[in-house]
Amino acid sequence: MSTCYQIDTDRCKGCGLCVMVCPKKVLAISDQLNPRGYFPAYQA
Image (cartoon, rainbow, N blue to C red):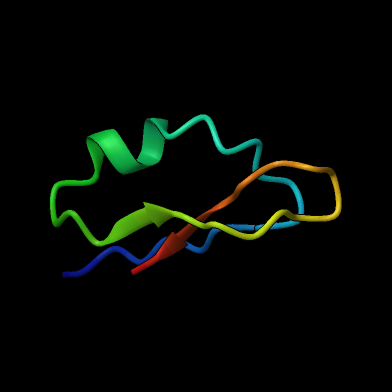
């Protein structure tokens, strides 16, 4: 059984917590700002 997560980049504050704890290391922080002015996480 596999779990799939989806990041809402419009609401992400770019704290990086999900990137640090991702067991597969497939998340990263974007270099583009979201509408709220943060750099959101995304699936690399």
